[in-house]
Image 1 (tube, rainbow, N blue to C red):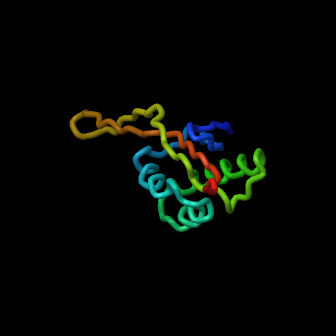
Image 2: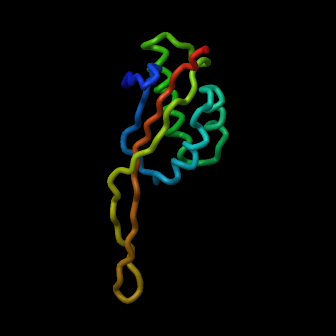
Image 3: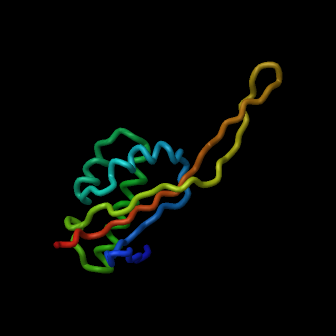
Length: 123
């Protein structure tokens, strides 16, 4: 919940998730489709995509839109996805037993999602 004005003085309201137990690469494939889209269209995309990453993305997107509407009074229909990124967080390391006493490493990756919404400025 931060107000970060950018270089062209556009207010961007962001929201970020905590540490999620999903791979950042799996989140990125969905996140890249949301950048620059209107809020209503992004919600519709996330509702019907068959990926595991859509549920936390939808929560973070609605939180960012709620931040913008509470602080600025903007309607959610006026918003669009301004910024979106995912950060890699600590990887949990586990081992799977294999043949002849060997251990096979399993990497359980985690990430953090940050989404920013803004309003389109009328030129």
